[in-house]
Image 1 (cartoon, rainbow, N blue to C red):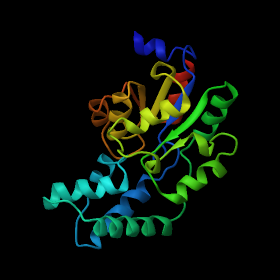
Image 2 (cartoon, one colour):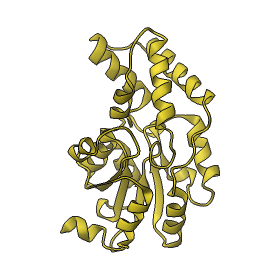
Image 3 (cartoon, helix red, strand yellow):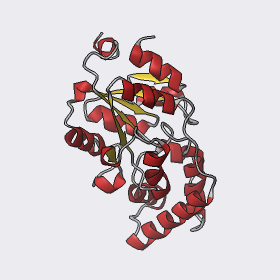
Length: 230
């Protein structure tokens, strides 16, 4: 009942915190290939599914996680820099990711209704961060973006969403999070925020439910119908 009330029209909803990759941009395919190629440069195998499972981590955390799990040791700063630099190079050499179908229309409707739009991402990818404001003029603003550059601990730690709450001044009960990845859902739920998950990736819905998502949908249109009860 509480979840239904949270999505029953506007009610107390004053802001939506969007993840970026896989929610605003159809970019996870590029990220997964770039990560796999970067690790392969050191002779290491980073399967695509594992990239999706760890989406939302900061770059350095992703490298450390891999080294701890696969090699049983911490990565050096040189290894972290080498892998992340290679990953960035591979990513930026690919065709620019396009927005998720329907996302701009949703952002425009939220703006008309006076619902604040924030972006909370584990990415530090300059290509995407710089493009957000130019791709969505008047809808996404630089001062309303929380990226990997703004936090010490990335998703699944709650710090990214707690940071967005502090910067925005909204209370958890006034906010809805839209995520697409298990670690992002865990981060948002740990911050006490209702979390709607749009599954635009390769993971099974069950994985997203198990991570704590309050709702799981497939398309942006379904997100809009839930928000506005249409």
